[in-house]
Image 1 (cartoon, protein in one colour):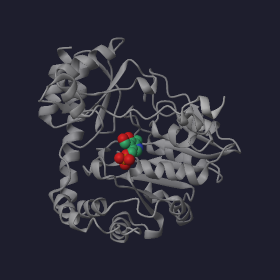
Image 2 (spheres, rainbow, N blue to C red):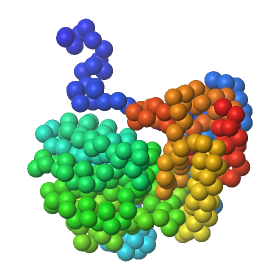
Image 3 (cartoon, rainbow, N blue to C red):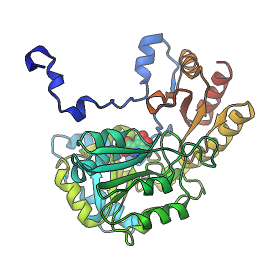
Image 4 (cartoon, helix red, strand yellow):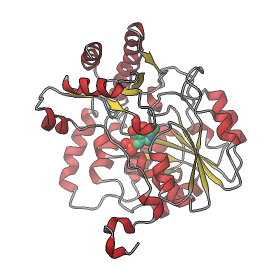
Length: 373
Ligand SMILES: Cc1ncc(COP(=O)(O)O)c(C=O)c1O
């Protein structure tokens, strides 16, 4: 095919042209435009309805005046605070424009055509995108069957069996999005201990704060023992800062060194650094938001189950529902009632919908709308 007869986008490398793009949740403004509704709630992107700490808001407002300057590319203050909180050294931390940025940087630094990365079926959609964009091979391991104790969750034993001499990364989302499922701590430990040293374990703990007493391991204390482990965390969920894009990876210093080589020098903004840093000074704000989400997770799941809707076990700030063959129609019926949830057809789960836990009032509104559609 001559480049002159095709659109210029077609000149992109094969591994990018064949990528399926990430499908985000529907923005409130879009639904306003489409249906002319004014009273809309968005329970579609696992955001925290309580927003950031007032301290973080004040720090970000103050930082606006400094936005003519490039940010501190080393993220010194934020890294110092994180290191103290997590009990690690600053040279183990890499900051990112959200943890999504860091997942992409990991793939860029450690993958190339001919190498492989493993992830579970129904695992977070960014893993295949990050892997395939490097030209490496994404190896999808079938998830647990629907009738298992952790339906549609990661099958760690099968993931371990999928490792070959060409594998460089295995992604484990704990808990996973969109399923909400998690891996018990003992199983995870056994798995990581069995992963050979030529493979990095990318442990994505974006929803770690919402564990709520469930058997979910904090991966950071394991870093001293497992040098091939990398833990990914974010300020987007429990810290309520999704819009400013700050995440971090904690790893062996040699891995952080490599991530830093491919990282844009100023990948976290002046406002993001200020907001995240101040948010760490207000753990009470985070704990209050998490408490509501954990309580609502149980309450909303009970209400749904009692009225006959199957709900997957969840350790996140969201629930995955089996909406049935007319899931798309129910999604659209919810939209008409001003409630945005997330279809997951892009995960090959056309009969499921994912709903983020909002405030008690928002959840009640979702439940009423769900009953009506
Ligand atoms: C499992 C998981 N990992 C990572 C992310 C990326 O979050 P962010 O880039 O906002 O830190 C998300 C966001 O939804 C997620 O669900």
